[in-house]
Length: 116
Image (cartoon, rainbow, N blue to C red; front, side):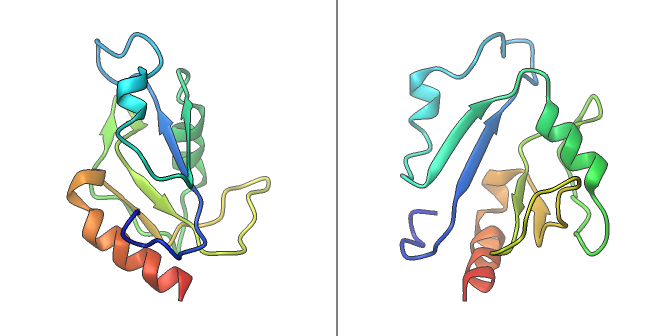
């Protein structure tokens, strides 16, 4: 997101244990991969957000093309338009897909559209 410097966005990166080596929260080196000052990073060992994202998914939110392991969402980006509120249910995302590394271009396009 560093290539979109003026966008009034917030980034929440949620790390969760998905493979056998994910025994603890991310190290300082891992957290340093995400250098954008607008990013806040969290450790979610119980997959609470991933489970909520799956439970609240509904139209018109796009259906993700990947990113399930043991019925838990992971390596996924969700983009919400400006002004939406997270209440008893999460609002539908305007972008909901992964893996993140393979979807950076389409995510960037969606961010530009949402912030124009």
